[in-house]
Length: 259
Image 1 (cartoon, rainbow, N blue to C red):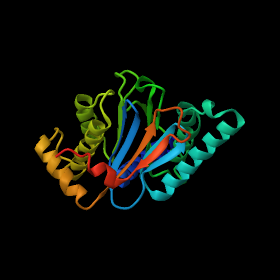
Image 2 (cartoon, one colour; image 1 turned 60 degrees about the vertical axis):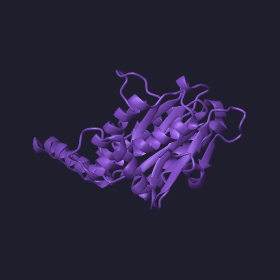
Image 3 (cartoon, one colour; image 1 turned 45 degrees about the horizontal axis):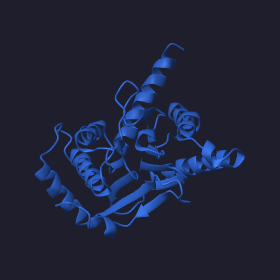
């Protein structure tokens, strides 16, 4: 019996290592708040990674397509049920994540004889003003990070999601110095693309722990966009709109990219 706790801890450690390896190549996602809403952005070739959840809430995710879809549908069902039994205004991202999704993912991760969720998710809820925007990152083990940081750190107007911790930290370091909540849509778009490029470059070169030169970032972005598409969506701040979530076409965005 003395060995049982050790075996469980060892199994959890092995499970964590396996999941981290599976998620390591996931294309980064950025969510940036600005005057008119929250911009979600990633760059890819095939699978969709950005989704509407409910009214003011959207989600980006990396991981196994099947697990992402299961979690997406669970989030939609929970939010819809809450909205139906109470009201749309009562649907809260914090409640959705803290009391529903996070416990489910934590339980699946710790039940070592069952499959865990191979997914890492980024949620955002748009507020009436930028200071009321909420960003929550949810890990495969149910851990939650708020505003892309911890409660002890300064509030951020953005959040990122990537396959490795190092990649995410570099993206955050760039956005801390470059992004402002009062930026225009064009400036926000370009910051999101550069942050994605920095994160993706880090995934290709895990030995690098410094922000690359901007010329290198621009060159890398151009190379990647030559054979990949921009996937982006906007959570609009305008409360008069019946639908807040709007997908943004690749062709519309490319004309706004700075050289």
